[in-house]
Image 1 (spheres, rainbow, N blue to C red):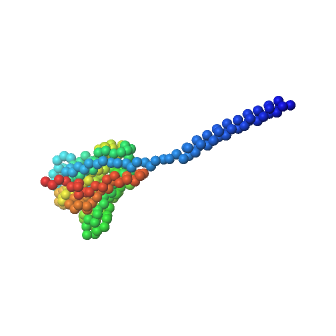
Image 2 (cartoon, rainbow, N blue to C red):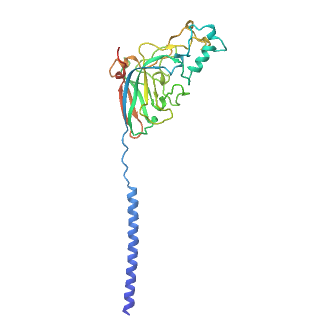
Length: 294
């Protein structure tokens, strides 16, 4: 009778071993789930950008077709032959083809410029939509306070002379710089598109990320005005022609106010990364971007 009892005890021991193995496997699975659930994510590293300031340049005012004349030889006031043909005439037809956006092959008036050029950056895939450029005027006039002349992403301030058909949908417009607002029948600089002040010109218009060599071009109002050719042909807009002669442009203002380059601390350009984490990439005193004195 004792043998059956010993057989039964061995059977119970075998079942216990099986149950123990199952519990061990279950504990292992739970531990694996917990390890995955509590995975620690480290915060992203802030981006960095190295820039170079270049002064003493000169560039056409591509943003304003009124400051452009067609290529070739023209006589002002325009001769009957140059005005001949259906409205707007020979000169006007060429002006439309070479000066009116998206065309940029005509002879645009030039202004002094300074440039902010990207030399190096990290990481390599920083989106142009994630970099904001803000031009701030700091208590620069008797109006006092802090005013913003322009603020927008580099993507929204991108211009491709000769190929861009229209500004970006979110392209910014100029505000005030202190109480400065150049006069003129066009209402001065306030409320005009950003490209009266400057523009972002990437190396490759098909790229949406920052590339070394990309440049923001800043126009400098150096005491003169671009030459306005808009009204040398009255058939273009039916405007006063000044006797058919080109005149200084008084309908809008091009470039940063001159005192930004003569008063330290008056104006600052901020480049900010608006992604995660938000990072101030550069604070550029406009005073340091003045062209060299002759």
